[in-house]
Image (cartoon, rainbow, N blue to C red; front, side):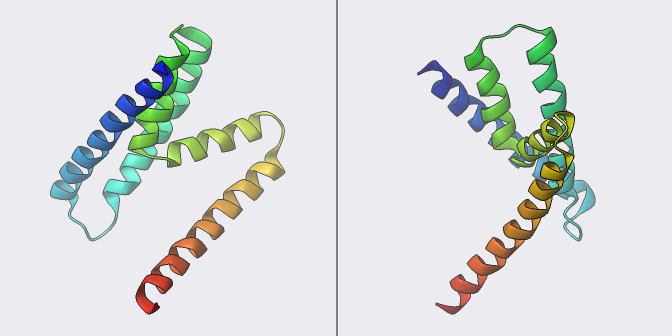
Length: 124
């Protein structure tokens, strides 16, 4: 039960952080290019890589707090960080072809799903 609570709290904080950071970046750089999403995703990937290893190998924290930070906080901030970490873990475990397949399918199917959803919303 505590894990779910930690994830909910972390998710809320991560969503707020994304919203705030997006607004700030768009104020500085404008909206002509999705700089805000790019920076949020890159920062989220860095934090996921750092905190995943840090809380696995160097710092001992409760599993609930770890889930709250990684799944909730960074999941609310960006799911791209999880995708990146899963790809890294596949590569590190010697599964580079599987990692490439995962990246390719994620991008291709994600774009297809977005276009399909938009098409259905506009036409039915």
